[in-house]
Length: 171
Image (cartoon, rainbow, N blue to C red; front, side, top):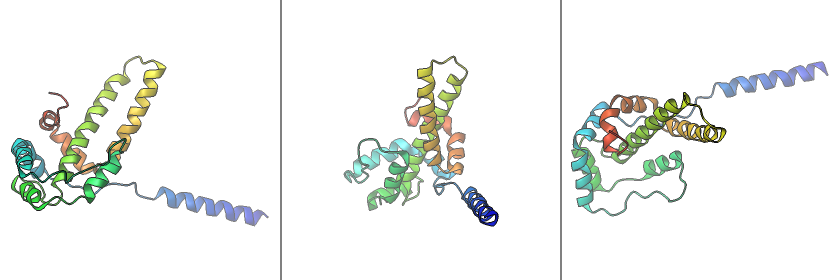
């Protein structure tokens, strides 16, 4: 009986160790410093030319409450039309993933803004209701950041001041 119990405990321990060694999910990096700089410098022309290309609604994400993971998965699985790919390349983005690069920059800016706001309210006296809301926002922030490659997030952090006004979140 003691051997059986010891065996079960050993098996449980091994499973716990193996589970702890699993790597957390991290998306593949899609940004480069040159792509971010090109987008900052030429985003207005890029957006104008995309509208002029009249490719219709080629990038469609289901409505309702879509999680960041679902949205980025849908964007990843969408292939831009040839005209749009040529525009991405012309304006310094990756021709195949320019739409994903833009989405990652936008989500990254949102994440950094939420992070800053949570940091600011952390020092304030908050009601229980506000604290509960803060916890929900923090959970969403964690979900959002988990969908952005850490190297991409650092690039976004580096160029945050220039990206913020592009995505209409301040300054």
